[in-house]
Length: 295
Image (cartoon, rainbow, N blue to C red; front, top):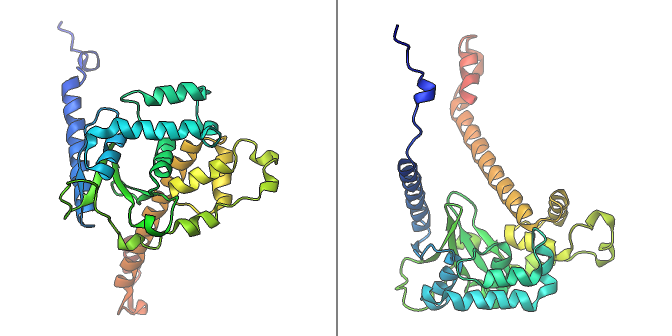
């Protein structure tokens, strides 16, 4: 008797090349959507080489129009962090010694994190706007006044790559032309910083032992959240991990936006269904149908 083949044991896994192709196609589709999203704002993406230096390449394009000057900006950022040790050392993760961290970040191809973004803003004296697919723009605001118009615009996509963002009319010769997004014109570092102030007398309290005022400032600058109590609560929950707090608050903000959009759509749908109808004329069969239409 011939034994039937076991489909489970003989099932071949999807070839690696095919998996890579599917991933690449997904990334290309996301990039097309992001391009369309920016196009609606009169902006365009300037691609830079994906070699681990993309953040510094995008920064170099914004400030000089030449991504090949990335090493210059890496050195500027790392030197700023090194010279301001007391401000940045508390945020280094995994118990890595400060000097070792700086040496590692100086190396070509080392990925930039939230700390490098904050340092880049401070050393260039520019606020930074990061555009993301189907997500709120993420601002790092440290300056007000004329600095608002000279903001650095980048985009972050596929969870790993930064590019430069310019206006569609920008010839891309030299530094990026100023971009002003009308919807975000109200953003003011001055107002932002007013709410960053923390009662110094409470620094020694046990409830804040895992972070300091600098952590709060970094999280507020990285998320745009101005509720100090909320930021402190999240920092306590993640044991003072600034990156984890930023990621949590941004994700929460996106969920709130999605929920509000759905609620608005549902309310609009309900108004359309009820408008002009006399509910007293509905029979028992149509009422459940109406209720289901709201779900």
